[in-house]
Structure formats: structure tokens, C-alpha cells
Length: 275
Image 1 (cartoon, rainbow, N blue to C red):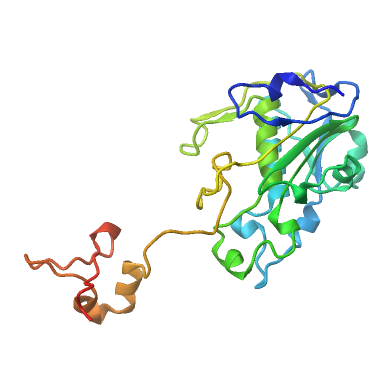
Image 2 (cartoon, rainbow, N blue to C red):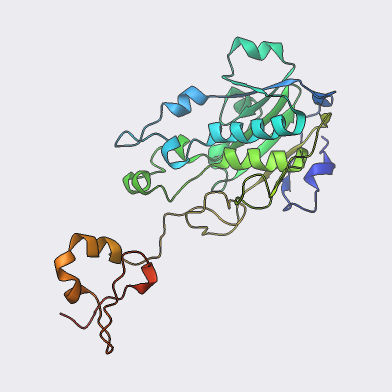
């Protein structure tokens, strides 16, 4: 089996675990600026998932398959000028394209022996085959009990392996770069693409460190967690709830200043000496 060493070996990106790839003819995904592919995934099934209080996955950015599709669609459109079709695997439109980029846990991923649920936290695996590319990752919503009631309410914990696989794919194969999430468009690079041909490739990766907090996009840094370090209760919320007890709750210094401020968080100090 051969492994496509070009983009996978890109030294501007973190190294990945290379796997034995399935032999097939080169995949001409983009030819003369024309898209020869459809993006497919079980989007309806994902959209139907609900939390214990009726929450949707999209509410807290946990719709990994849909978000992964959006990542690839944005990259293809900005690099080629062509808007790709996004649909279900069984949609009749798929037959109009020689290739697919299949996202998430599907019959295609199973046929290639991929087991995304068994990957390390937020890990992903990418494989080419004769009909395109499969990107499947460990997605929390697909694992019963992964998100408990607290997780569904807070939204701090996410597990979007498929989305991270899509992000890695456009970085390695389309050379897309997003250097900052600030000033959208200013720190992004979508190089023009008239031709994209893939040789047999297979690899996997996952975040290595254990805490990235609530910053969803910093997936390369570490896994997501519901751990949160902060102050409780929030001084602003407490002051609003008890406006008649500000003197008791907050500290007044020797100069007479009451350290309570409804606009600047750092100007709030509790009087811990007051029983």
C-alpha cells in the first residue's frame, strides 16, 4: 500500500500517524477549476439529536459533521470559486459526481474498517478510496452518555473529531491557513486551486494535551474539557441580586472606597471579614 507523502509530510503542520492506504487510481477532485465531488454526510440524523432538555447539537457547536462540511465547502468555494453540493449519502445528486468527500460515521467509513468511536478523544482518521475521501472522527454526540446534563447546559465540553479532520484536510491538501479568528478575512489564506489530485492516503491524528478551556477552535492545542476555573458567585450578578446589601458584601478600604463596580469586573472585592 502506498501513502501520499506530500501534504501529509508538510512540515508547517503537526506530524500525523501514517496508515496503510488502499490502492486506487489518482483522485481528480478538482480539474480545470471544476469540482468533481459532492460533500456527503448523515446531516439529518445529526440534526435530530436532542439533549435531555431538548437542546440541539448546533446550539453549542457540537454538530461536528455539519460543521466539518461547512469547513470543506468554504475552502473549496474560496479556493476554486465553485460552490460544492452538500447532501445526504443517498441523495440522487451524488450520482452526478465521480467522487465524494464523506464526513462522519457512515456506511463508507465502516466499509473501510474505520472505527471513529474508538479513536482517542477528538481524534480523526482520513482515508482515500477509489470513489473519494472519507473523514471520520470521534464525535461526542454519536457516543451514548458522552454529554451529561451538565455538559448539555454549559456547552464548555465539545468533542468534534470529524470537524477537526475536515480542518486538517483543507490545511494539508488545499494549503488553507487561518492564522487568527480576529478580523475575519484579514488573517486567512485561501490559495487559488485549479487542480487537486490525490494519490492513495491514510492517516490519523488527535489533540495531545488535556485542557483548552472553552476556546472551541484551538483544537490542535488540547482536548476540550468541562473544567472551569473562575470565581463564584459572580460579583456583578450578586450585586444586581442584592442591591440593598452592597455594604455587607463588598469591601470598603481605609480611604472609604467601596470596591464594587457593575462595569469593570476587576474592581470588585468581597469583604471576607464580614461574617
